[in-house]
Length: 198
Ligand code: GRF
Image (cartoon, rainbow, N blue to C red):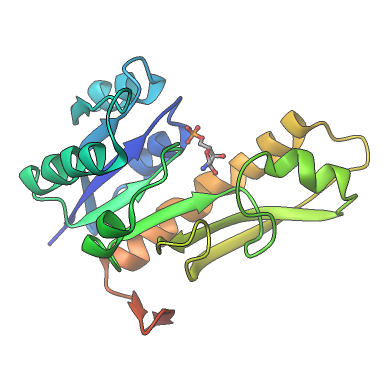
């Protein structure tokens, strides 16, 4: 049976688009939640016939916001929660409540370059390789066990936008593959590690 996947976004939602396009009988996107009312990804979801909610974060404590998101996810009977350009840090309580069922994509080869302004920092450090990582979400930011990773070259003349575009292409490949692994039970969070089975 297809796993019920909810996707949390804050922006254009190109990863959401790749997840919509790649869905097979292992997972079904049943709900998209954005904290930003005009996030482009909401239109992409609606065009695909997926239910959407906007849950603004402004003026709320983290605990109140996270509780609202949690209630929406549980109300939608989500089984897996996928963060796709969701620009809010989730509280430890929220993360623990979805442990092993909550994943994120980050535009670096984790554990290198956690946090923001990744491409700027990669270029400033004159790295020759960068990439993207899908990981289980744990309370510590960008520190969860990696499920899937792919690399791209960094060229000497790259601007951060050039590199972001090259990394985004591989994000669109590895994120659906990682969601399928999780949906099929082929990867699990086990004692703080990503455990793979055939
Ligand atoms: C991606 O680069 C992702 O790695 C990061 O935020 C960006 C989201 O892009 N977490 P999009 O909204 O999926 O197009």
